[in-house]
Length: 244
Image (cartoon, rainbow, N blue to C red; front, side, top):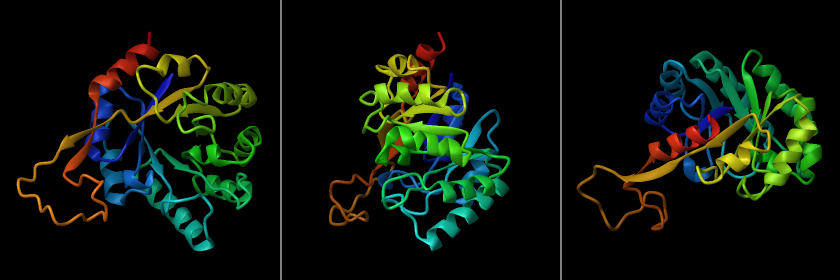
């Protein structure tokens, strides 16, 4: 079984490689659920030995109904990711009716020729989950990242199992969202090809002076002096569970 870490920094990717994770999904802006990272970040991560790099192709946060200008940006970002050394790309694009946009997805797959294409959890936002799985297969992606149509994968475990059955080996199914050492074995038992997890932990930043009057993110609920890191113990526990 393959493993994938959702990573937002070069440091997190270096940690993934050191611990033996197979692949990273490289993103920026965790507060938006992940958008396309900088070319410099992709280049630095691509230089890490023994680690596959799937780059998030998402021009903004929010829904997955994209304008023509946004779609053209996605095509351009795929080219930049390829040139920066990425081994794969991750995207999801829907119609206003909540279905997989097969035509545009196929165009993204064609633009990414030679790289692995993962259709992300936009599949969980569709109006008909099983039909969406077939649509992603039709569009030519090699992998689906899914929580089974629920916020957390463990709650969508039956749908994930159904997606594995529907796929019939035609596409990889990767379970993600809320994957922990406490539920990894249950999710792995569905027959998925991979598990996707963040193993997030927040650590204090190094700033000594902290201005109490300003929040650059516009919300006092956001701790701007806490940095996202990787819980190495959690990753090791997941790897031990699924590599028995």
